[in-house]
Image (cartoon, rainbow, N blue to C red; front, side, top):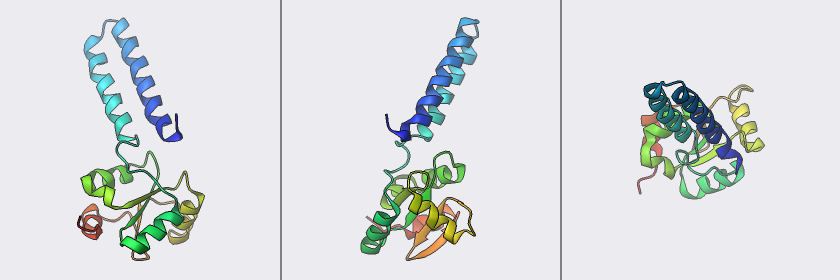
Length: 144
């Protein structure tokens, strides 16, 4: 199992354990409500929602060639999740860099955010934008 699946697997395990405990106590309705909720949160934090992350150096090179934005993010960040969900299918047209997996990406984010690892940070044409509006980012994505 890769590191990207650890949090979703933990969420599913905890949700299953909680739902089982509730069901054994006779609270079937609450168990039936909590298990899908935990599954939804696990799916939202899984690699299924976020595009495959690449390294900052590779993202910079690819962006220079194709002009696509580079999005620096980290797992568990609600603003990153909001951006990803608001971009919808267009999110795959950006280059995503997980700063927890790529020290160079984390260093680049700190360099443009006064030493803070504030994400999402989106780099378009060499210019960094911290927590930009998803509609603006959508406008920066190349059309198919």
